[in-house]
Length: 559
Image 1 (cartoon, helix red, strand yellow):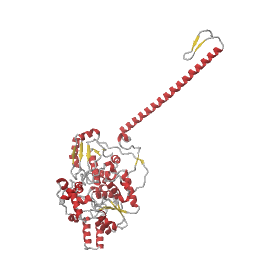
Image 2: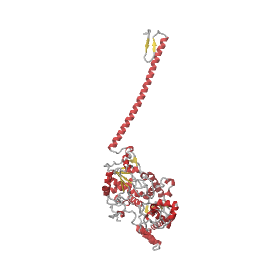
Image 3: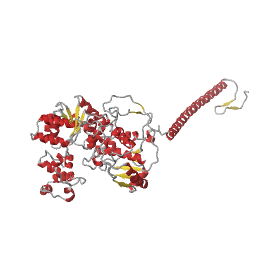
Image 4: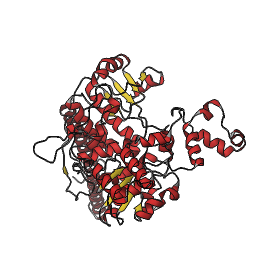
């Protein structure tokens, strides 16, 4: 066993056999060390293999879990389209904590957010795509948007988010999403009509190539016009662009579901952006601190006076300026005014002509005095002060002016502010920093006035323009809040009699009160005039199909 020769231990040491002794013991020690070294290496390799296997196993678990999760999401989306995440479908998940349905008032108490399951999207065969370009101011466009939603729903087409007017007098560059909460608008109407922020990419190319049809629809048309005239165009061209949308849907004679959808769009889907809503709440809170407040929609602005031709109380120079603003002859046909030389040599005045001469305002001669006597002019600030005093409005009442810059400035406002010292505007209540993002964006500024007007204790418009009408209807919807609808024709007659001493103050005041006793926005049926839709009561000023009456028999008084 211990003879000569050698023993080979693979992978370790080579030992030679020799006689017993110290040298043999040393070799045995070497063998032991080599064996221990191999064991240590084996242990290290085993540990490394275990770590590698653990990492591989973790990676496989993560990959498998991810694949399973996405498979579940895709299956759920395909089955119900209710839980599709925002990255897939563009609407909130049913697991998202959404805001509670909006309260009729901005001053509602805070509510606990709760899970709300959105209604399933309406499934229908898409007949094509409807693009619309709104025209006019904020409230004119607001009503048009509601009409276009109803039309898209009835025609079973996809509506593209409306384009807002940027070429009107105000030249407001605001987009839809700058004024309205676009995601809420799309989501809240998903069970009625499919709405997209923009055309799909493949259809954008058709627009670039001019492969679509554009037209202004006929004013005050009933829904059959859109079914018989517009729908075939959509089916033929795939995309139809309605390039003018104000007053394109009739007031009356429409199916009840169409009228209800117009209201739902107006009072639930068209919500202002969070920034506008928050600033509106701040203004309302400031006003409520001083008790009840009155909103006066004093439509005595430069554009209104120029367009209507109403110059009562203006100086000769102001009347001429308003006339020049209305007539477009200077911009379109050259200068032909008695002050030709002045215009030609004064570049500032010449530029102002081009700025204020709008080709879509018809060139016309207007008899201002006759229009005023017919009740077709907005009340002046002086006339408004007399009207408020005649109605016994307390002089300490806070009066919020919902309007742009008053023509004539402080001089024309002197009578009103003398009678009512607490006259305020958003510009006087808020810091300039609060309004810096809204400056030069008239529609966003008008949205603030709209919110404050809804919440006022009394709303008084001095002219029945679009804002006056739409706010009137919204206040009716919120529970017939007090809205004083002025009889301007009678008022100017009484004011002239009082100013010429034909009647005394008591006679004047009692006559004004009696004339407006039943003009406070109470329930009343909308007036229908066959074949004269422009003279009918406007749907958005009195959407009686959508109103909840404050009494049991659900009857309306006569107009």
